[in-house]
Length: 194
Ligand SMILES: *[C@@H]1O[C@H](CO)[C@@H](O)[C@H](O)[C@H]1NC(C)=O
Image 1 (cartoon, helix red, strand yellow):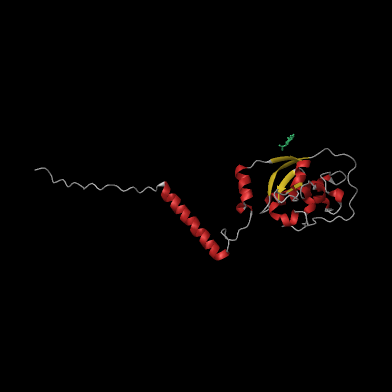
Image 2 (cartoon, rainbow, N blue to C red):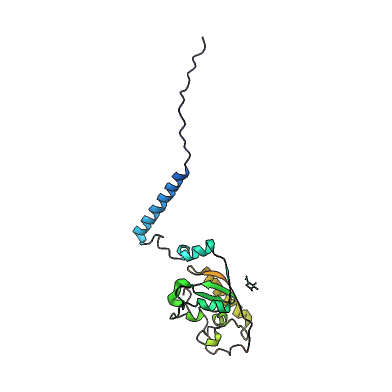
């Protein structure tokens, strides 16, 4: 007699692998729940975070954009006088997008003097009410000190939670004399955070 072989019945194996559609459903559900609870607790879809990571213009720049390389003349169009254009602040050849603070850098804003130009000198001297200080001409300043100030401000704008670096501006050659010495030296004319 052959041994009694008990055959295990064939159970059709159910797929335990997640299909793409399941993943999409799960992730979508989590995102929706996240947004819902965020609205519930903070009245924003981002748990109260308001920075460049939720700024569509920043995301678009990061994904599709490329760095600018403007002339001084081109830069002058980005001073906020045209509400459909972004606002750029130049600091010693580097440009930063500050469009989100249109009320501050726009035509009637308290820092409008810095918009659409490269006023590197004023960032060091603090003389931003003296018109001829609003230039990238650093002649006559203590260059080491000026460059250190300027680097500080470049970092400030580059790392700001709502501003970002967008590219460069090509300086026109300097002509004529540098600005006269500024009497009312005020370092850091505006509070960090502005
Ligand atoms: C910007 O353009 C100028 C002239 O077209 C060029 O000489 C310069 O190298 C460019 N700068 C950058 C950072 O791309």
